[in-house]
Image: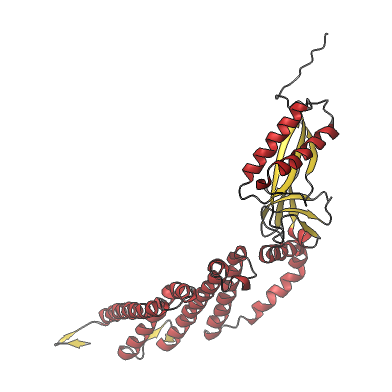
Length: 360
């Protein structure tokens, strides 16, 4: 390049072109984003805003290399990089950049439909998958896009990766059997997280109402579900077992009731049947005395004799109500239980230990 009689060295021209491509790409993206922001402000959906936000980075990359390619073919039309023409090199770069843009746009769509759509009443009813699935699905789709770009990239280089496609088939013959249960639980976990037959906090029972697997759902992850039974113990259940069972959900959406649990210990020597009867009567009494507490008797109050404690027999009362705050109704029931126990001389003991010494 000759400028007023001064000849620039090629390396300096190279740096000038790179800097020029960067400045031009930044200016172009700035104008493009301002125009798009003006357009998206006119719309009522958040989708276009999210897509624009996710595409900012990939668009800068594409624009930079696009301007760089245009400048290079003008000043260095015959330049070779790593044995490839400038056209071939830019094609390879664009394959990777466009795949990055595609992954970003897919991420934007998923974020909108799984995270943002819940606040949009027009499409809320159409969103059947839970936003809990969003991280897994985002990762899987991005992986598919990048793998496809990987194969196209190396195919352009003249490297045939087709034999690699046989590796998963070969591995699946041996590894597939070993991971069979893991994969079943993984896809069962996706089903539980997406269709939500149960969710965290639900009181469920598997196969029948008196099943040993009965309790409150504490956690659902990709392989197992954690259920806290009525005795307070945790059960780790494989997702495949949960999804293939008849699920009785006492906290279903169709019956939007809240479940309350009250645990209490009484002295050894107490009449177990009487204790159970008094705890159930306490719920019925509160329901009669205060209609404002909205205790629902369609679900029969249940009392479970849960454990032999160090100093007390332990019981758990379970009942349902429609109150916004559970504490109010639970306080009323506890007061009623305390009154009935005092009236019937049922002792609630202090924690004690009895030590017996034998004469030697």
